[in-house]
Image (cartoon, rainbow, N blue to C red; front, side, top):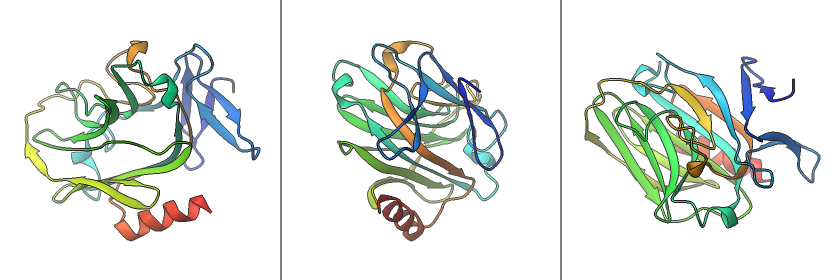
Length: 212
């Protein structure tokens, strides 16, 4: 269906909005793009209210993993105050969840539950296509992986997030704002999510294999 694509496991629709579209790369593979000319689209993976990816404390195995292959449009990022790769609420104190964004020339990953927060950053991301992933374990660390390498990790601090008001999982924008000012121009492929923290060696192996 135009404006939708289905995940291969649960057949949940991903909704492409405001110019986001399915495209074909040079190898003939289907990819999703949030930017087409002047448009600033975004992709919704659905509403996860009361579930792991909106409130990580509800994850069945007390952890989660997100992995994808993406290409950032860095030329169009230079004039943006902030831009979001993915968001399920971690960026706002009125929600829980996670968010990966570019702010002040850094890429910041935040994950929050009702009473704890993990936050890390890395200065840059690769040009062209690359493998991106992060894992989180409730009693351990938040970890960020790029192309098979662990580039940053973080321990928890105490916070208070009594409500989870924003529960959708969105790609290319913050899930609490419709503004186009914070949308990330990019192409994305092969996104996968687990309700457990995959071990480091498995994340590194999967990312390395996807490059070959």
